[in-house]
Length: 219
Image: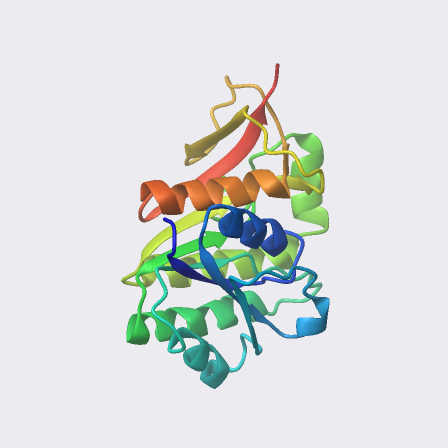
């Protein structure tokens, strides 16, 4: 993947930063799309910054037309308490711009509890999904639907609870569809783990048009 150029949405977020950092470490050029460049703590000669809002279709279109990108990675996320769909609406702008300008490869960080992973997780995770993340997951559901209807080579990644530890773990398990309860897992992964799974899918051209969940194997 050396010298390839990727565009990252949600770049200033806690998951976007390790995605960009690992991508740069792997030799990629990165363009970060952010609302507020002042919140971006990463600097590198192979990192460019574009300021914009995903709700602004003109800004998103301009970003996608600014370079010959090999892929787009989205780690967009927002906590909402009402039935609105800002991430889904912004993602639709990204899809339209990608289908107009390219590239076709789109990797998206969604969430455990979205799509056919609804009900996955331990008792605490399911309670949090139902009690606190109802509208967040509704937004993610609509985001995934827009993506799955597109003509892009998408991969949807659904992590469970995220931690800020910097380690990339070797015991991360991924799967498609509902979780096999016979496989005992820890419903926590690091954001660094999520970044590693995203970039592995990009490098290996894996999980094309698939939604995968992830967790860590319980020892």
